[in-house]
Image (cartoon, rainbow, N blue to C red):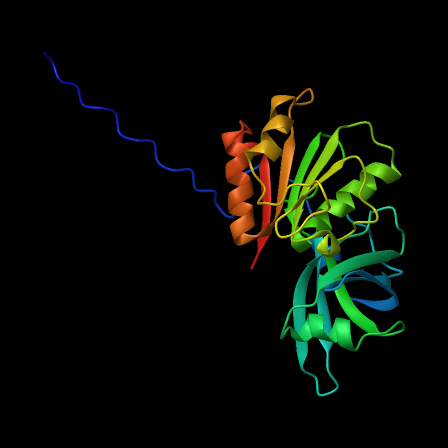
Length: 259
C-alpha cells in the first residue's frame, strides 16, 4: 500500500489595506492642494452621536462619490488640527459639500463640531482626495459599510438617485440599532440594514454574515459587481472575507478603513 502525503493547506486569506484595482481614477493634485474657506450653513442631527454639517464652498471644483477631503481648524493661538473626512454629498450639489461626523469621545475636531460649531463659522478645506475609492457611476456597485463607514457610500447612493442611473446598485449597512443607523430617513429599497445589538420587531439581530452577502453574489448583474467596503479595521476585514468566500474577485474589492 502506497502512502501519499496530503497537500499543504491553503494559506488563510488576509485582506491587505487596499486591493490593487485597475482603472483607478486620477485626482487633480494641483486643485486638491489648494486650501479653501468653507462656511458652515446647516447642521442636521442624524443619530444621537452623528450629525451632518453642510458647507458653502463657492470655489469647490467638484468631486466623485467616494472621495474625501482634508479639513483644517485653526485656533486663535495658531494651533491647527487637520483631519481626513469622507464627503457625504452627491457631486451635483454645486457650491456646497456635506460631511457627516461621529462625535468621538476626546476628539478635538469632532468635539468642536458637535459642541461649539454653529452656522456662519468658517473652516478650511482642500480636496477632493483619492481616486481609489471613487465610483463614477459607470459600473454595478455593491456597497458594504458599518457605522460612519456608510458616509462615502451614501454619496454614491445619492449620485445614483439624482442621475436616475440604470446601473445596478445595492447597499448592505451595519449599525448597532435603528437609532444609530445614519441616514435612516433616506435609505430605500437599494439598502439592507443589519443590526448587531437591537432591531425592529421581527428582524434578526447579529453580525453581518454570509446569509446577507451570498445572495447578492449568486445573482450578479452583467459584468459582476464592483464592491466598495468602508468601516473599521475589524469590519473591513470581516466584510472582505465574506465577499471573497461568496465568489467576489479580489481585484474588484475596494476598501477604505479607519480606526
